[in-house]
Figure 1 (cartoon, rainbow, N blue to C red):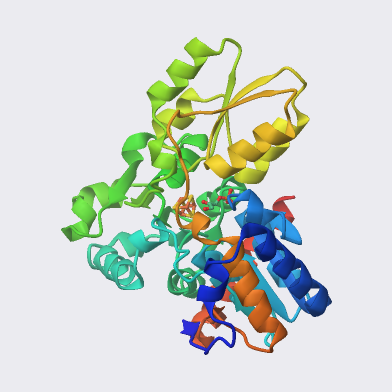
Figure 2: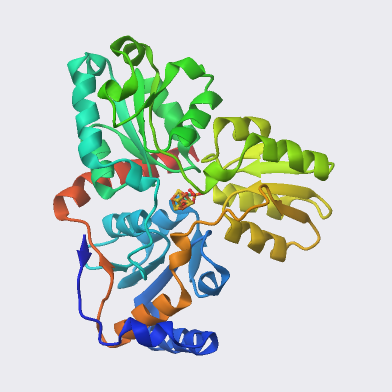
Length: 370
Ligand code: 13P
Ligand code: SF4
Protein backbone atom coordinates (compact mmCIF):
# COMPACT_ATOMS: atom_id res chain seq x y z
CA UNK A 1 0.00 0.00 0.00
CA UNK A 2 1.25 3.46 -0.80
CA UNK A 3 0.09 6.53 1.04
CA UNK A 4 -0.56 9.27 -1.52
CA UNK A 5 0.57 12.61 -0.18
CA UNK A 6 0.89 15.88 -2.06
CA UNK A 7 4.56 16.86 -2.39
CA UNK A 8 5.37 20.45 -1.44
CA UNK A 9 8.37 20.34 -3.75
CA UNK A 10 7.52 18.95 -7.20
CA UNK A 11 9.62 16.08 -8.55
CA UNK A 12 9.91 17.82 -11.94
CA UNK A 13 12.14 20.51 -10.40
CA UNK A 14 14.63 17.84 -9.39
CA UNK A 15 14.58 15.83 -12.61
CA UNK A 16 15.94 18.83 -14.50
CA UNK A 17 18.60 19.66 -11.90
CA UNK A 18 22.32 19.27 -12.77
CA UNK A 19 24.01 16.41 -10.92
CA UNK A 20 26.19 18.64 -8.70
CA UNK A 21 23.15 20.60 -7.44
CA UNK A 22 21.38 17.33 -6.72
CA UNK A 23 24.30 16.12 -4.60
CA UNK A 24 24.44 19.47 -2.77
CA UNK A 25 20.72 19.40 -2.15
CA UNK A 26 20.98 15.87 -0.69
CA UNK A 27 23.84 16.94 1.57
CA UNK A 28 21.94 20.02 2.79
CA UNK A 29 18.77 18.04 3.52
CA UNK A 30 20.80 15.38 5.37
CA UNK A 31 22.37 18.07 7.49
CA UNK A 32 18.95 19.54 8.33
CA UNK A 33 17.33 16.20 9.08
CA UNK A 34 20.21 14.75 11.10
CA UNK A 35 19.57 11.46 12.87
CA UNK A 36 15.84 11.61 12.23
CA UNK A 37 16.48 9.90 8.90
CA UNK A 38 18.48 6.85 7.93
CA UNK A 39 19.22 6.01 4.31
CA UNK A 40 19.56 2.30 3.57
CA UNK A 41 21.06 1.15 0.27
CA UNK A 42 21.10 -2.25 -1.40
CA UNK A 43 24.36 -3.36 -3.03
CA UNK A 44 22.76 -3.15 -6.49
CA UNK A 45 22.13 0.57 -6.21
CA UNK A 46 24.04 2.83 -8.57
CA UNK A 47 27.16 4.64 -7.31
CA UNK A 48 25.63 8.11 -7.31
CA UNK A 49 22.95 6.83 -4.91
CA UNK A 50 24.90 4.36 -2.79
CA UNK A 51 27.37 7.06 -1.79
CA UNK A 52 24.57 8.79 0.14
CA UNK A 53 23.56 5.65 2.06
CA UNK A 54 24.25 5.53 5.80
CA UNK A 55 24.16 1.76 5.70
CA UNK A 56 24.63 -0.67 2.83
CA UNK A 57 23.82 -4.33 2.73
CA UNK A 58 22.25 -7.35 1.13
CA UNK A 59 18.55 -7.97 1.52
CA UNK A 60 18.97 -9.85 4.81
CA UNK A 61 21.31 -7.30 6.39
CA UNK A 62 19.03 -4.45 5.36
CA UNK A 63 16.03 -6.12 6.98
CA UNK A 64 17.98 -6.47 10.24
CA UNK A 65 19.14 -2.84 10.00
CA UNK A 66 15.54 -1.73 9.48
CA UNK A 67 14.48 -3.68 12.57
CA UNK A 68 17.20 -2.04 14.68
CA UNK A 69 17.31 1.60 13.68
CA UNK A 70 15.60 4.19 15.85
CA UNK A 71 15.45 6.81 13.06
CA UNK A 72 11.97 8.28 12.53
CA UNK A 73 12.16 7.77 8.78
CA UNK A 74 13.84 5.04 6.75
CA UNK A 75 14.59 6.08 3.18
CA UNK A 76 15.01 2.79 1.36
CA UNK A 77 17.20 2.83 -1.73
CA UNK A 78 16.29 -0.60 -3.01
CA UNK A 79 13.11 -2.14 -4.36
CA UNK A 80 9.51 -2.32 -3.20
CA UNK A 81 9.60 -5.66 -1.34
CA UNK A 82 12.58 -4.43 0.69
CA UNK A 83 10.78 -1.24 1.71
CA UNK A 84 7.73 -3.31 2.67
CA UNK A 85 9.89 -5.56 4.83
CA UNK A 86 11.38 -2.48 6.50
CA UNK A 87 7.87 -1.25 7.30
CA UNK A 88 6.94 -4.66 8.72
CA UNK A 89 10.04 -4.88 10.89
CA UNK A 90 10.30 -1.23 11.91
CA UNK A 91 8.60 0.14 14.99
CA UNK A 92 5.01 1.45 14.98
CA UNK A 93 5.84 5.11 14.52
CA UNK A 94 8.57 4.70 11.89
CA UNK A 95 7.84 5.74 8.31
CA UNK A 96 9.40 4.09 5.27
CA UNK A 97 9.99 5.86 1.97
CA UNK A 98 10.80 4.31 -1.42
CA UNK A 99 12.23 7.19 -3.48
CA UNK A 100 10.69 5.89 -6.73
CA UNK A 101 7.50 3.85 -6.54
CA UNK A 102 8.32 2.21 -9.86
CA UNK A 103 11.24 0.38 -8.23
CA UNK A 104 9.63 -3.04 -8.10
CA UNK A 105 11.01 -6.53 -8.74
CA UNK A 106 9.85 -8.56 -11.74
CA UNK A 107 10.57 -11.78 -9.85
CA UNK A 108 8.41 -10.76 -6.89
CA UNK A 109 5.61 -9.96 -9.35
CA UNK A 110 5.68 -13.55 -10.66
CA UNK A 111 3.72 -14.81 -7.63
CA UNK A 112 0.50 -13.18 -6.46
CA UNK A 113 -1.16 -14.05 -3.18
CA UNK A 114 -4.27 -15.27 -5.02
CA UNK A 115 -2.19 -17.67 -7.07
CA UNK A 116 -0.37 -18.92 -3.97
CA UNK A 117 -3.62 -19.48 -2.06
CA UNK A 118 -5.11 -21.26 -5.06
CA UNK A 119 -2.04 -23.50 -5.32
CA UNK A 120 -2.26 -24.33 -1.59
CA UNK A 121 -5.93 -25.31 -2.00
CA UNK A 122 -5.09 -27.55 -4.95
CA UNK A 123 -2.36 -29.23 -2.90
CA UNK A 124 -4.87 -29.79 -0.08
CA UNK A 125 -7.41 -31.32 -2.49
CA UNK A 126 -4.99 -33.97 -3.76
CA UNK A 127 -3.78 -34.84 -0.26
CA UNK A 128 -0.31 -33.28 -0.41
CA UNK A 129 -1.06 -31.26 2.72
CA UNK A 130 -1.83 -34.46 4.65
CA UNK A 131 1.94 -34.62 5.09
CA UNK A 132 3.84 -31.78 6.77
CA UNK A 133 4.41 -29.08 4.16
CA UNK A 134 6.07 -25.75 4.94
CA UNK A 135 5.68 -22.71 2.68
CA UNK A 136 8.93 -20.78 2.40
CA UNK A 137 9.18 -17.54 0.52
CA UNK A 138 12.21 -15.75 -0.78
CA UNK A 139 12.47 -12.20 0.55
CA UNK A 140 11.73 -11.10 -3.04
CA UNK A 141 7.98 -11.45 -2.65
CA UNK A 142 5.00 -9.38 -1.57
CA UNK A 143 4.15 -8.75 2.07
CA UNK A 144 0.95 -10.76 1.50
CA UNK A 145 2.98 -13.86 0.56
CA UNK A 146 5.23 -13.39 3.57
CA UNK A 147 2.06 -13.20 5.69
CA UNK A 148 0.82 -16.43 4.08
CA UNK A 149 4.05 -18.12 5.22
CA UNK A 150 3.66 -16.62 8.69
CA UNK A 151 0.14 -18.09 8.95
CA UNK A 152 1.23 -21.56 7.83
CA UNK A 153 4.32 -22.21 10.00
CA UNK A 154 6.60 -21.05 7.19
CA UNK A 155 9.41 -18.55 6.97
CA UNK A 156 11.09 -15.99 4.73
CA UNK A 157 14.61 -16.63 3.49
CA UNK A 158 17.20 -14.70 1.55
CA UNK A 159 20.12 -15.83 -0.55
CA UNK A 160 22.41 -15.45 2.49
CA UNK A 161 20.48 -17.72 4.86
CA UNK A 162 18.68 -20.14 2.53
CA UNK A 163 21.05 -22.99 3.47
CA UNK A 164 20.53 -22.97 7.28
CA UNK A 165 16.81 -22.32 6.89
CA UNK A 166 16.35 -25.14 4.38
CA UNK A 167 18.36 -27.35 6.71
CA UNK A 168 16.03 -26.68 9.64
CA UNK A 169 12.85 -27.04 7.58
CA UNK A 170 13.96 -30.15 5.70
CA UNK A 171 14.56 -31.83 9.06
CA UNK A 172 11.21 -30.82 10.54
CA UNK A 173 8.88 -31.09 7.50
CA UNK A 174 8.17 -33.65 4.81
CA UNK A 175 8.12 -31.10 1.99
CA UNK A 176 8.64 -27.46 1.22
CA UNK A 177 6.75 -25.20 -1.17
CA UNK A 178 9.15 -22.45 -2.21
CA UNK A 179 8.19 -19.14 -3.85
CA UNK A 180 8.91 -17.39 -6.16
CA UNK A 181 12.50 -18.08 -7.32
CA UNK A 182 12.77 -21.57 -8.73
CA UNK A 183 16.53 -21.15 -9.17
CA UNK A 184 17.41 -20.23 -5.60
CA UNK A 185 15.09 -23.06 -4.51
CA UNK A 186 16.67 -25.63 -6.83
CA UNK A 187 20.24 -24.51 -6.15
CA UNK A 188 19.65 -24.73 -2.41
CA UNK A 189 17.79 -28.04 -2.64
CA UNK A 190 20.71 -29.45 -4.66
CA UNK A 191 23.11 -28.48 -1.84
CA UNK A 192 21.16 -30.95 0.33
CA UNK A 193 21.41 -33.68 -2.29
CA UNK A 194 17.74 -33.54 -3.29
CA UNK A 195 17.54 -35.16 -6.74
CA UNK A 196 16.32 -32.89 -9.55
CA UNK A 197 13.26 -35.09 -10.18
CA UNK A 198 12.14 -34.57 -6.58
CA UNK A 199 12.11 -30.80 -7.17
CA UNK A 200 9.05 -30.11 -9.32
CA UNK A 201 8.10 -26.74 -10.79
CA UNK A 202 4.70 -25.20 -10.08
CA UNK A 203 3.41 -23.19 -13.04
CA UNK A 204 0.65 -20.98 -11.62
CA UNK A 205 -1.08 -20.86 -15.01
CA UNK A 206 -1.73 -24.62 -15.18
CA UNK A 207 -3.89 -27.05 -13.26
CA UNK A 208 -1.81 -28.63 -10.45
CA UNK A 209 0.97 -26.34 -11.56
CA UNK A 210 1.45 -28.52 -14.67
CA UNK A 211 2.22 -31.66 -12.60
CA UNK A 212 0.42 -34.89 -11.88
CA UNK A 213 -0.88 -35.56 -8.37
CA UNK A 214 1.66 -38.42 -8.12
CA UNK A 215 4.56 -36.13 -8.97
CA UNK A 216 3.47 -33.63 -6.34
CA UNK A 217 2.97 -36.34 -3.73
CA UNK A 218 6.45 -37.72 -4.43
CA UNK A 219 8.20 -34.31 -4.54
CA UNK A 220 10.41 -33.05 -1.73
CA UNK A 221 10.47 -29.48 -3.00
CA UNK A 222 7.80 -27.71 -5.00
CA UNK A 223 9.34 -24.71 -6.73
CA UNK A 224 7.28 -21.77 -7.93
CA UNK A 225 7.98 -20.96 -11.57
CA UNK A 226 9.59 -17.56 -11.03
CA UNK A 227 13.01 -16.23 -11.85
CA UNK A 228 15.15 -13.10 -11.92
CA UNK A 229 15.46 -11.73 -15.42
CA UNK A 230 18.80 -10.09 -14.57
CA UNK A 231 20.49 -13.25 -13.28
CA UNK A 232 18.75 -15.31 -15.98
CA UNK A 233 21.00 -13.62 -18.52
CA UNK A 234 24.02 -15.51 -17.31
CA UNK A 235 24.38 -18.77 -19.26
CA UNK A 236 26.54 -21.81 -18.60
CA UNK A 237 28.50 -21.14 -21.79
CA UNK A 238 29.52 -17.75 -20.34
CA UNK A 239 31.40 -19.73 -17.70
CA UNK A 240 33.17 -21.81 -20.38
CA UNK A 241 34.00 -18.72 -22.42
CA UNK A 242 35.48 -16.69 -19.57
CA UNK A 243 37.58 -19.67 -18.44
CA UNK A 244 38.95 -19.96 -21.99
CA UNK A 245 39.62 -16.23 -22.24
CA UNK A 246 41.03 -15.65 -18.73
CA UNK A 247 43.12 -18.60 -17.55
CA UNK A 248 43.02 -19.02 -13.79
CA UNK A 249 39.78 -17.05 -13.38
CA UNK A 250 37.44 -18.02 -10.54
CA UNK A 251 33.74 -17.80 -11.24
CA UNK A 252 31.46 -16.57 -8.46
CA UNK A 253 27.72 -16.15 -8.99
CA UNK A 254 24.54 -15.27 -7.16
CA UNK A 255 22.25 -18.27 -6.52
CA UNK A 256 19.45 -16.57 -8.49
CA UNK A 257 21.40 -17.83 -11.54
CA UNK A 258 20.23 -21.08 -13.11
CA UNK A 259 21.26 -24.47 -11.74
CA UNK A 260 23.50 -25.03 -14.79
CA UNK A 261 25.40 -21.79 -14.18
CA UNK A 262 25.74 -22.40 -10.44
CA UNK A 263 26.92 -25.98 -11.06
CA UNK A 264 29.67 -24.79 -13.40
CA UNK A 265 30.81 -21.95 -11.17
CA UNK A 266 33.44 -22.17 -8.44
CA UNK A 267 31.42 -20.37 -5.77
CA UNK A 268 27.94 -19.02 -5.25
CA UNK A 269 26.30 -16.89 -2.62
CA UNK A 270 24.50 -13.66 -1.74
CA UNK A 271 25.72 -10.22 -2.72
CA UNK A 272 27.48 -9.87 0.64
CA UNK A 273 29.15 -13.24 0.21
CA UNK A 274 30.40 -12.16 -3.22
CA UNK A 275 31.75 -8.87 -1.83
CA UNK A 276 33.45 -10.56 1.12
CA UNK A 277 35.04 -13.24 -1.07
CA UNK A 278 36.48 -10.68 -3.48
CA UNK A 279 37.60 -8.40 -0.61
CA UNK A 280 39.52 -11.25 0.98
CA UNK A 281 41.04 -12.57 -2.25
CA UNK A 282 44.77 -11.96 -2.81
CA UNK A 283 46.04 -9.26 -5.19
CA UNK A 284 46.41 -10.60 -8.70
CA UNK A 285 43.50 -13.01 -8.32
CA UNK A 286 41.03 -13.12 -11.21
CA UNK A 287 37.28 -13.16 -10.81
CA UNK A 288 34.29 -13.44 -13.12
CA UNK A 289 31.23 -12.31 -11.20
CA UNK A 290 27.69 -13.30 -12.13
CA UNK A 291 25.49 -10.67 -10.56
CA UNK A 292 24.12 -7.17 -11.10
CA UNK A 293 26.49 -4.90 -13.02
CA UNK A 294 26.53 -1.94 -10.60
CA UNK A 295 27.92 -4.17 -7.88
CA UNK A 296 30.46 -5.80 -10.21
CA UNK A 297 31.70 -2.43 -11.50
CA UNK A 298 32.04 -1.14 -7.95
CA UNK A 299 34.13 -4.17 -7.01
CA UNK A 300 36.34 -3.63 -10.06
CA UNK A 301 36.85 0.04 -9.08
CA UNK A 302 37.55 -0.79 -5.44
CA UNK A 303 40.10 -3.50 -6.19
CA UNK A 304 42.23 -2.43 -9.16
CA UNK A 305 44.93 -4.88 -7.98
CA UNK A 306 42.53 -7.78 -8.71
CA UNK A 307 41.17 -8.66 -12.13
CA UNK A 308 37.39 -8.47 -12.00
CA UNK A 309 35.10 -9.25 -14.93
CA UNK A 310 31.35 -9.32 -15.36
CA UNK A 311 30.55 -12.94 -16.21
CA UNK A 312 28.46 -11.99 -19.26
CA UNK A 313 29.64 -9.42 -21.77
CA UNK A 314 26.24 -7.75 -22.08
CA UNK A 315 24.85 -5.40 -19.47
CA UNK A 316 23.16 -7.31 -16.63
CA UNK A 317 21.51 -4.41 -14.92
CA UNK A 318 18.48 -4.42 -12.67
CA UNK A 319 16.42 -1.70 -14.35
CA UNK A 320 14.08 -1.35 -11.37
CA UNK A 321 16.91 -0.86 -8.86
CA UNK A 322 18.29 1.72 -11.28
CA UNK A 323 15.06 3.73 -11.08
CA UNK A 324 16.20 5.14 -7.76
CA UNK A 325 18.18 8.13 -8.97
CA UNK A 326 19.84 10.84 -6.86
CA UNK A 327 17.09 13.19 -8.10
CA UNK A 328 14.44 11.01 -6.41
CA UNK A 329 16.50 10.92 -3.25
CA UNK A 330 16.92 14.71 -3.21
CA UNK A 331 13.18 15.11 -3.81
CA UNK A 332 12.05 12.86 -0.93
CA UNK A 333 14.58 14.39 1.47
CA UNK A 334 13.66 17.97 0.63
CA UNK A 335 9.99 17.18 1.14
CA UNK A 336 10.91 15.63 4.48
CA UNK A 337 12.62 18.84 5.54
CA UNK A 338 9.22 20.46 4.96
CA UNK A 339 7.56 17.79 7.10
CA UNK A 340 6.02 15.95 4.14
CA UNK A 341 6.47 12.18 3.72
CA UNK A 342 6.13 11.35 0.03
CA UNK A 343 6.22 7.84 -1.46
CA UNK A 344 5.51 6.19 1.85
CA UNK A 345 5.27 2.38 1.85
CA UNK A 346 2.78 1.07 4.37
CA UNK A 347 1.69 -2.52 4.89
CA UNK A 348 -1.79 -3.02 6.35
CA UNK A 349 -1.97 -4.15 9.98
CA UNK A 350 -3.19 -7.69 9.45
CA UNK A 351 -0.65 -8.47 6.73
CA UNK A 352 2.02 -6.84 8.84
CA UNK A 353 1.17 -9.01 11.83
CA UNK A 354 1.53 -12.32 9.99
CA UNK A 355 4.40 -11.22 7.74
CA UNK A 356 6.35 -10.14 10.81
CA UNK A 357 5.98 -13.66 12.23
CA UNK A 358 7.70 -15.07 9.12
CA UNK A 359 10.35 -12.34 9.01
CA UNK A 360 11.16 -12.47 12.70
CA UNK A 361 11.29 -16.25 12.53
CA UNK A 362 13.86 -15.82 9.73
CA UNK A 363 15.99 -13.46 11.81
CA UNK A 364 15.75 -15.69 14.90
CA UNK A 365 16.69 -18.83 12.96
CA UNK A 366 19.53 -17.09 11.14
CA UNK A 367 21.00 -15.78 14.38
CA UNK A 368 20.68 -19.21 15.95
CA UNK A 369 22.46 -20.82 13.00
CA UNK A 370 25.30 -18.29 13.54
P1 13P B 1 20.74 -10.42 -1.88
O1 13P B 1 19.91 -11.29 -1.01
O2 13P B 1 22.06 -10.97 -2.16
O3 13P B 1 20.72 -9.03 -1.40
O4 13P B 1 20.05 -10.38 -3.33
C1 13P B 1 18.72 -10.14 -3.40
C2 13P B 1 18.31 -9.56 -4.64
O5 13P B 1 17.92 -10.14 -5.60
C3 13P B 1 18.25 -8.20 -4.71
O6 13P B 1 17.44 -8.05 -5.74
FE1 SF4 C 1 14.33 -8.49 -8.61
FE2 SF4 C 1 16.33 -9.57 -10.01
FE3 SF4 C 1 16.23 -6.93 -9.67
FE4 SF4 C 1 16.80 -8.53 -7.61
S1 SF4 C 1 18.05 -8.24 -9.44
S2 SF4 C 1 15.40 -6.80 -7.61
S3 SF4 C 1 15.51 -10.32 -8.09
S4 SF4 C 1 14.73 -8.22 -10.79
